Length: 240
Image 1 (cartoon, rainbow, N blue to C red):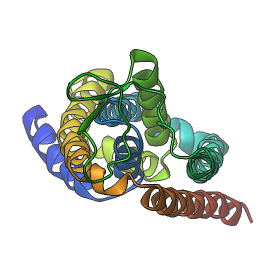
Image 2 (cartoon, one colour):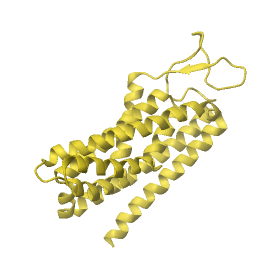
Image 3 (cartoon, rainbow, N blue to C red):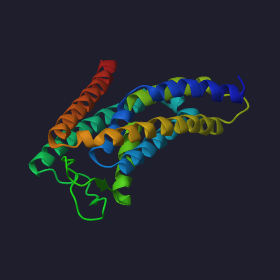
Image 4 (cartoon, rainbow, N blue to C red):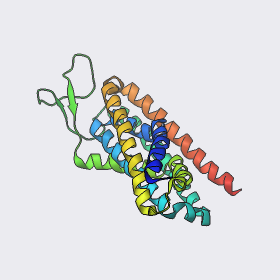
């Protein structure tokens, strides 16, 4: 297999995976709908950077390290499960707190009407159309949440540990190959998830009333909790 054949083959495999709904898409939807599109896109870049880290790590020997020390990967999976529980708790709690607070702006960002005057983001019919903005600190928080969500995603870890070694090319350094393959998935991830963020932003106004927000948060949190439980249960089962 040549270098170009490896890139094309991996692009097809990674592209198919990027299109499958999962934790990454859920994170982007959550950040976009509950805060701003800017924060949703920041999460996209965080997730995509996580993809790149996994690709490089797998190429330079992560698979061999895990085969030698399987407890290392189990530890990563347990941490991932615990992080999913944390996300589930924070999503559910945030919706409950928002309901009690009377619908304050959740991301702490500035909300303005189109004419520049102070406004609300309640989306009530007849109210001035509003624009919601996020500052650098808030976008950085979403970037980090996206990165951790991808890094601790068991599906991503299994994918790279199993797939990357099959696309290593003789004569090409593992680090170089890992970066090349990772960049392929990085670009595909950015394109797919940015599209999701823009689509979510377009429909977000219909989901920003208090009842929809609470339901969305509870459902998202429940799914995260189930995935976290399944991840930890799988680790325990493999050790019994």
